[in-house]
Image (cartoon, rainbow, N blue to C red; front, side, top):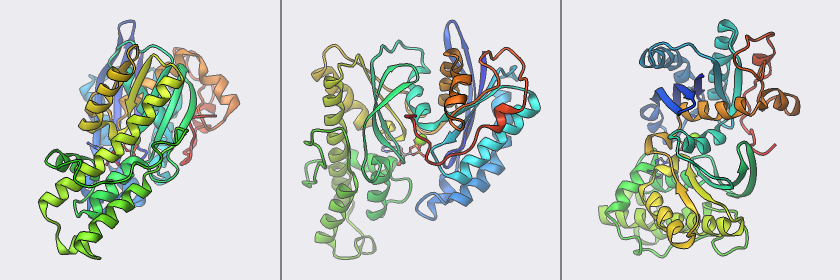
Length: 370
Ligand code: ADP
Ligand code: MG
């Protein structure tokens, strides 16, 4: 079967064509149009500007994705319908609905976080349940337990900033620009992670929640101590920035790894998987992999290749395959109208009414756990 994935939840417009057969997934195309240059001027994503760019880019992305995939016949359309920025989500959702209605194809609404998790299935390696997923992105930091496909239990999440948001804000206060994650990790490579003694918030609490806003503030106070009230204007020395980036990054990684290992032990999982934009961080990838090997001898570790960690539509298509194969489309439509809907549990049948596209709505606070 061939699935067309559409992703516009934040500032990346992405369209992908993914083929699934007995051999597994094959990504035929995965076009991502980034808006970083536009939002960098403002130091963060401006929702209405993002929506305008999605509108401009979505059709060219579709054309390019179809061309790269050699114009295959599509069986199912999958679109991110939350969580995310409402103006951005609306563009993708309405585009997908119009496409589905016009081409008479079934359509399914996908949760963006579920997409990040399922990026791990795209390379067809065997992942045994139960699975513990560490989801780390610009909007989310969660530990999710999966007993089987499509069954999620939230073990813990951030009580304030997401870890990616903390990377972005620390980069901003060090005068490094946007987005912060890739710049902090580059600067950290040249710095000393032990130079500054930053806190590891909530690391020793007996729960699986996180907090990153205090860590960000600790960086601010440390910078002010040395450089005064307006550190960025004064101009920090390159060595100071490198050491601070490394110290902050290590503090964040320590908390993420500590809680993940504890949760994996408690719930006796067979696999730990990493996902979300911050999973592109090389130091986190290396250190978590080592920690799982050292502390959890019978547990496997899995992470998506770097280009599939940040927002893309192939991961959205991957989720759609498991939903349709589990015949979840109709059942979930009854359970929760805006979570997911389709005309038919059998993708081969032609849609019979206009219901499917009518019932998919953009929802900025869509939860994975319904
Ligand atoms: P969203 O949060 O909209 O779902 P992504 O999943 O693509 O978007 O995640 C974006 C976040 O990932 C941003 O906060 C960005 O700073 C962070 N990020 C990207 N690359 C890295 C990296 N190498 N190290 C740390 N954080 C990163
Ligand atoms: Mg994301």
